[in-house]
Length: 168
Length: 411
Image (cartoon, each protein chain N blue to C red):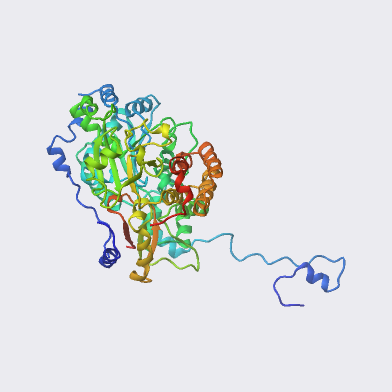
């Protein structure tokens, strides 16, 4: 008998047996479905939230707490926050991914650098040389700084406009 | 100051976190010049709600976020709804070219706060949620401090103040999307009716106002409605804050009479065109308000004067363009903005902006096809983003037909 954990129906038919029961089912998965909450991540989220209410309307405020402190929103922190707020992880995920200032980082992905420079590429800034800045800045600032496009930041009389954002 | 590669590198090197700059007019200085006296008169029963609504209506104050809805009428409509009622303040200034709210918040936040608290008193709003865009972190930190002072002085005892932070979404400047965001959700605009005045925050009747609309309430009560209407040009009435940028010598916020023309604005308030630039076109109202040619530089700028030309003054964000600006590139920049910022909820906008941007980037432009696409977006989008996104494109087709023959330019 093969030592593989799962047998497929084709294995059974190749052994030449006819009319017998189908091959054994797959073993049940070892963990429940979906991401499980990591205790370390849960402790970190609770420490950040402190006594703040867990009501749903505060979801974006709480996501800001995590993004400000860690520089991104890891899957582990999102799962922990979902549990704390009694929301489905997908509800937290859909809100986190809707807003441009949140960086969701799944398992195995690389978090963004600690510093982000946003370069406005809306009209008044495009007219004032935003594209040149977008070309020059990555070389100038190096790989420890992320340079991204951003929409109008409300300072068009001082175009071109950039904003520097840092992880706490 | 204007960013250069060097100044950005310096800013990165300083590793500074945002911190609150002191308010231009501090709480004490504001009180020192009779600040909060109008609010106190309201709270002490020396002023009636009807009188306040009448003053604001007679002044002709209109929503200065862009929609221009008559303010007094809105307060009356909300007041007519059953309690409990709420208030939401739109500090999510995001229309490209607009920076007047930032200007007033930085310089004189208490004039806005007083107007807000008076409005809340008029409609008996139990709670006020101020929603401030995440791109204004210093202002948010300053407002936290200033609101604490106002609360400690007992000036907000008739309501409860909350300050909420945006997270980078232009669509959250749309009134119903903003409410969704305050409720902790994605900023997806709602179908209307019911309107926000009937069903708003947490399902309750809600008064929603732009920062600048509230900023003028105190002055109108102090000086009278006639003071406000005494300003105006070309038979229009009122004062407006134009955010001017682009090819002018002296860009910035210009407090000017409603109805002023762009030519007058440039010459009298902005020091004229930048050297080496001649007026070719202008945006009268941000990205949504369309593009007009220099031949139409003598139109009065006000709510209601530009609609017949396919444009509107909206947030009064004026971007001045010259012969150095390819109008197709201008329109493409604006369409890409709408494509990025579309919430994605409805097909005509989500797909329409993307398709329009692709067609505009890969010329030559096909006017009939672009017209058809624009009609679909205009007629079928749930909210103003999708409905207004075709405006710059349609203006290029209508007012700049010669540009269609030249290749797409860039800066």
